[in-house]
Image (tube, rainbow, N blue to C red; front, side):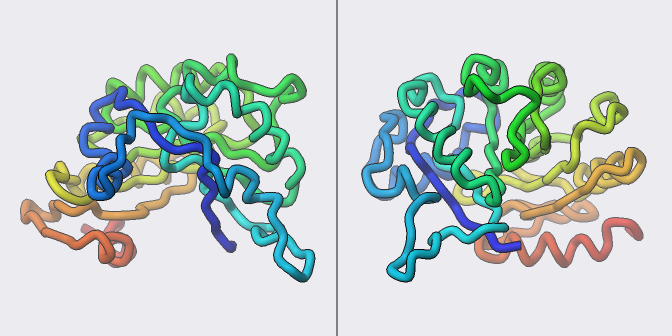
Length: 243
């Protein structure tokens, strides 16, 4: 599957332990940008509707679009823009829009009038970095309507037991990742393996998308450069069922 990215607005407010070393804040600081100032994209707000000179969409049908990864789609400051963003999403029914959030409590306040049971082309992913946030957010997530539901255990800060939330079969996938860049907190492979076994038990798809910059395996800490985290996660998967 082809993948793309769409950030209709930029900026966010830290609201959770997982936000402590946020990668958006990290990169904005390098550019001298204030991440707490929320701004609508001047050039790419309508990116999914843009076409090339030959008249074809720049984001092709069948593509999965990582949506609002430099903000939160349900951020309060974005209320004035969200209805227009939903309209853009509706106009591209053959594109999958993956929307992560730490603000699932605002979900029902931020839906279009025709949402119903959800749009077929929208995946909602709730981020849970520890057991407390998993318990709080996933209980809310279970009560909302969406055709596709993912869980992002990222940045994974401790071992998390998702068992009670997977029995219903409503969650399609859990994607796990460690924290990156300066001051990254460690991600232990034992936590990753535990989540994988839980997913296997309940027939839920599992993805280990990155190790994080401080990855622990068999008690040893591995310092991993960010551009290698994805490849190292793939390599670690070879051992996940045999360690």
